[in-house]
Image (cartoon, rainbow, N blue to C red; front, side, top):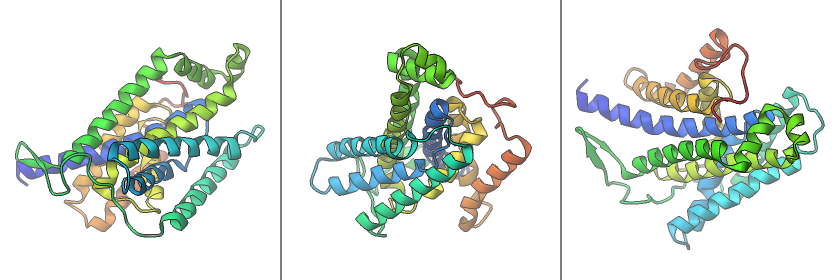
Length: 296
């Protein structure tokens, strides 16, 4: 295999891995604050992409993306207010079933609103066939947008949780909800904010990848599985480690295509998840007992 081809696979793996990492960070934001594994996270990406595609038909692209993110944030808040907040000390199994039910509800809602057709947002810059040449390999400008947006999300979230008052309040809620409540923090709204933040970054990522992968109502489940795999691989709750794990999984998936038929690509993620759960359930970067508050 020539260097140019290897580097082409490498760039494609980084692009896919960055998206997996964003999905995993969405999992971790909610888990760190509430202990909930939100299996509807993949649907937030799809919903953001779908709304942006519809709005871009009659609005400027930047405005369509901004409104899609805002609309998905509202959906994230409603998920907490309608399905999570009223629960009193629910079991982990009950919460898992509820979030799976929410994902099905969102998926069926998107099917009725947009049908089963595949849609795609137009590229942020350039065209579908334009590309940039790097060391003999070609990468589309939209892939660079996806990588850049992923990097900005990671840095912005880190600064938000470390430097802002609301971010610190969310960290306090994650560390000890009772103590945070005694300090005057409205922990219920911190939980709602975590759903809104997770939905918002998911929607932005969904808009970024729509010109690359296209968008369909039922692709959220696959994204959720891969995001969950990355979250487990990095150590559940550790968002910085999720970035490294996401890039690693993206590279493994892309390079597996050179050895295995394309139909086995998704099976690679499931195989990695099963291996990690069997041999190291705390993840490659996690401790034996998962700590909810990591770098944030």
